Amino acid sequence: MFSVKKEDGSYRVKVLNGETVTAPLLQEISKNGGKVTYVTLERPNMDQVFLEYTGKSLRDAEQAGSFDKMAASRQMRRSS
Image 1 (spheres, rainbow, N blue to C red):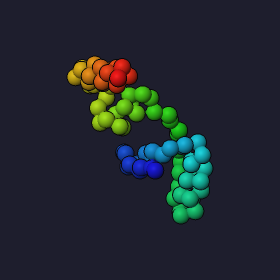
Image 2 (cartoon, rainbow, N blue to C red):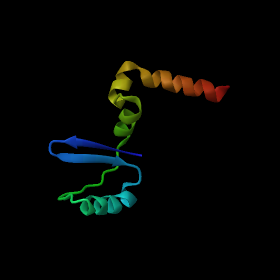
Image 3 (cartoon, rainbow, N blue to C red):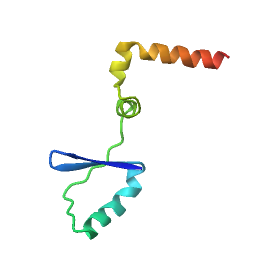
Image 4 (cartoon, rainbow, N blue to C red):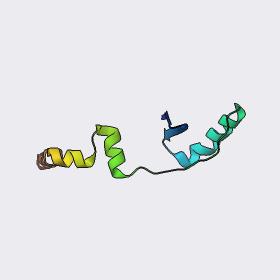
């Protein structure tokens, strides 16, 4: 699974296992006439992962009290 987003004249590609996907992706781009001038690999931090799955930042969730509710819910499930 992957996603591509154009940002300010460049493209951001999100993939799982970027370390193994990057070389074949660059080869495919080149084979199709594309030109890549710069590549970075970044691992997401916890806030980015949380935002990706929930649509909220960790800070927003803390301020809204979501963590308290989530922690209580998890604790109740473990106790049962």
